[in-house]
Image (cartoon, rainbow, N blue to C red):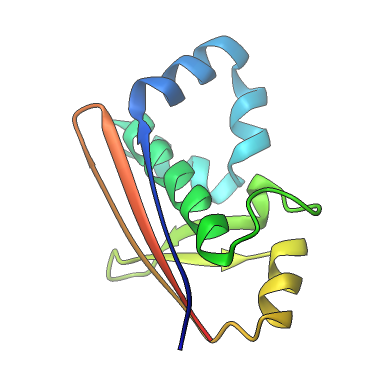
Length: 125
């Protein structure tokens, strides 16, 4: 059974501008260390970061929670399997909420092109 579907689009330049303005403080507030390391390995790290930002937003939309009730950006971590396929790992408050909702599966698709990154999440129960 599908619990929810979420989608989000982010301008890569928005992420780049936020890092320029706030520096490492922005990155550390929104992304886990593993997400930052992954992005920095690539030629265009801001595209990777924007895609992860969009995935985090899409995840909260799919669950119907938004970033409320103690859910933080770093509670939702976007990593890649060995195959390259992206996956969402839940931590903290959002993990507790997902368990109470009996979430059984999270499906993530992300893409980026030019100045845009998009993510779609389907949450199954």
